[in-house]
Image (cartoon, rainbow, N blue to C red; front, side):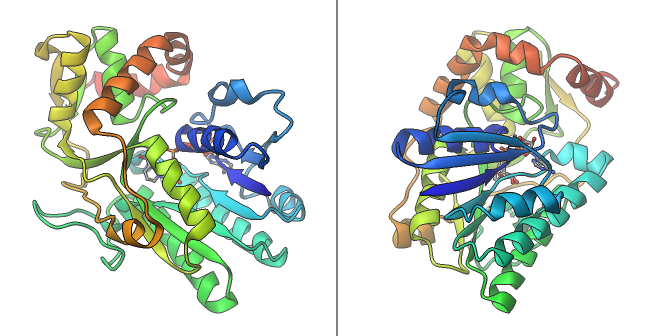
Length: 335
Ligand SMILES: NC(=O)c1ccc[n+]([C@@H]2O[C@H](COP(=O)([O-])OP(=O)(O)OC[C@H]3O[C@@H](n4cnc5c(N)ncnc54)[C@H](O)[C@@H]3O)[C@@H](O)[C@H]2O)c1
């Protein structure tokens, strides 16, 4: 069996490729990634020289390269590639529209032409918008994206849906909650907290810190994607989540406690415009249909993740140099 993964040099994509290579020794994986600031070949350094793994640098908006890879007729396409950072989408939305919408279109078109038999669109719970203090997102919750990031993902999901209905294209969609784990770029909340705490820097907390996220260990997400890829029903959407709701401030405090750092490092900063208050996933459908559930308890996964970043300080130092510094100075320094 051979699969094409897009965006495999990023956080979840690299975890997924490593997971699949571990679980399926005979599987061949091609990874198409543009290597934006968020993509990093160091995330998969251990697979260099693996005869079952091939990296191709390229843009999913480039139909020539996408057509070429689809003509090898992969058994499945797992589409992770995206611009993913909400804050960046507020300042510059164009690349989100290009990669997340146009890029998805290019993949769909090429895959349809080559009669690819399985296409998994990796989406997000953020397409559903924000929840009040109670209730959970189900697959029937109406789309109500609030950021340019989530709007571009919702647009891509609708495009996928239209290919299923119009062309009988064999696609499925997953919508997962916040992931955490190894190799996440430290502009995202959890690695940002860990990185700043280890350096004794302030931990910027948006607003009152009481925004709630539903956390899932990346490896649990990868297992779920594998299930959906192999056993999911074409045309269906599967929500994925761990029933692990935590306020941002609670997570930041756990990080400080684990690292033995003082709470005086917490710094409340001006809230993100349009900041969604709460996300929570009802993962009942994937549980019942595909026999999947989250296995990692948040406190255990968090401890493991913190240790991973501390043991990979060189990786952290490398990805937080150059462009990252300039970006974060602009984002937080003046608040
Ligand atoms: N991180 C989360 O908590 C989370 C939760 C739910 C869903 N998702 C979804 O999972 C997917 C992966 O998220 P992530 O956090 O790993 O993202 P990431 O930002 O860490 O990685 C994105 C990858 O896509 C690549 N990429 C970007 N534009 C590209 C283009 N035009 N062509 C080819 N490659 C390109 C980047 O180089 C990078 O390797 C995304 O689609 C995201 O919407 C993420």
